[in-house]
Image (cartoon, rainbow, N blue to C red):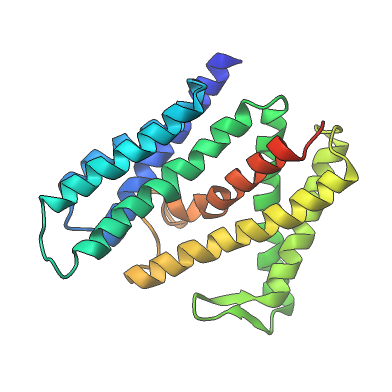
Length: 246
């Protein structure tokens, strides 16, 4: 089980490095040195749950904050943009490796593998149902300032799809879910996942890019694939930690 969790953390560490690189290329394209330092340093957060010390997680986050604050302090390019650059650099740590770290925490729970599949089902069924519902019935724009193509009808259809996906999990590989768990996780994680998608759209429009990267031909970058999962991971973990009784 430990070996499986370590391999899983290695995969997330790789995704973290790629995601951090994409974020820096969008937000701080001139900061090459900072990119090469931040990408591997941030991925260390993903492995911290394997140590099993919550204080260590806080210590590393604090150390990263101080280290990169010093780095930007003594590598000033323009005083007018320094605050914005530091904000983007520190946001990258919280947005990508810190949120991904919750998937490792979730993997370590008694039904961790099942919960990981539930997240995948919620996100995939939400995306698919939202797309087809929006294409068929979409008339009212959900948030045109951030994502002009998304509709209210599509968002509602996505939540229905999430409910169907979570119900499928209950009747196939995760019978320990109660109907309360099914409805709560489908709706809450479904809404949060959609918010994660919108948040990444907000960042991309602010940075003036269409996709976060080109690593996946025809589908954009790593962050384009992880946007919903990044927000869904901590919400699911804290639901399991505080509310799920199995």
